[in-house]
Each structure stands twice: as structure tokens, then as C-alpha cells.
Length: 186
Picture 1 (cartoon, helix red, strand yellow):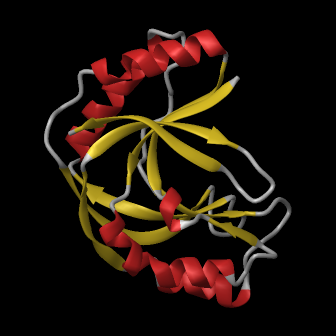
Picture 2 (cartoon, helix red, strand yellow):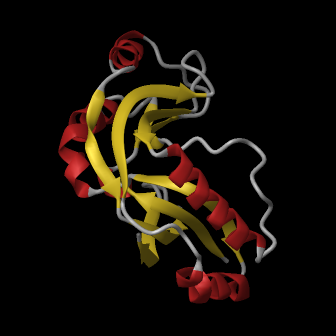
Picture 3 (cartoon, one colour):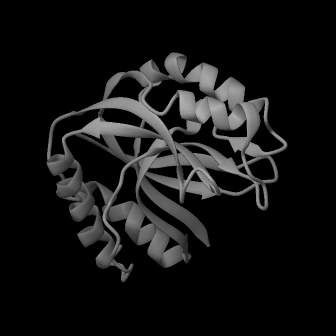
């Protein structure tokens, strides 16, 4: 079985602006698991565990996804939590981008995934950058809560999505290991 997902990688040019966030979250490792900058991405479709035949078929046809061409400009801005700040599972940074182009790209990926009998996501697509995951049973408070609230409207920087990638993900005790298998340049 191969664990797969389709994502828009975050360009390295945004890493320096996010480094202080990463360091701060990493200093709270009893409560959070900070996402390493080299793993920053916007998930478009999580496929999950795929048997060998399906995984091979996805990898061999991935470059055929008919997606809109051209870089998609983004502004990484704001910080929040899912499902909410009182009981978060994920702390994220938001995106300002061309909602129509992102929605079209998402629909193209959903149609592609449907060819392999993956269910279409019923919730609206809300692109976000996961910065940290809150460990099970933990709550954020004190300086951690203040940090998230202080950065609620922070503008981290501008960049663009330049490729759509197929990743494999191997879970380890030290965190996931992502491998980019294929990429379509926008």
C-alpha cells in the first residue's frame, strides 16, 4: 500500500518569513507537532492508502490531469485553527489567491481522482497551510494562544504556486516523510 496525496508545494522563498513561526511552535513540542518547512504544501486531494495497482495507475497518468496553466499568485496571510481556537486540531496560515482558479484546479483534481473511484469531497474547498498539529487531548493556552491570536492578521509574504505535485507519504515516529513522485508545472 502506498499513501498518496496531491498538493501545491509552497515555494522556498516563503520559508524565511515562516521560520520564526516554526521555531516558536517547535518550542512547544509537548503540545504541538510543528510542520517542517520542507513539508509545507497546500493539500488539494488526500488519496490515502492505495494498493499497488491503483498507486501505479495514478502515478503513470498524473501528468495527464487537465489543469489551468500559469502560476497562481498567493499571499500567505493570517493564522487560525481548525475546528476552532478553543479546541484546535490544526493551526494554519491562510491564503489570499485567485479563488476561481484554485476552485477550478480543485475540480480538475476531483474529476481525475473520481476515475480511480475516490469519493468527491462534499465540503467546500478551503486551501490553507498547516503549520502545526495539536497533539491528541491537548489544548493551547497562555503564550501559545496569544501567539496565534497576535498573528491572526499577519501577512507572511507573497509567492505563487508553480506546480501541482503527486506525493507519497510514509508515516514514521519522527513524522511523515514526503516524496514528490510527479509534478505538473503550471
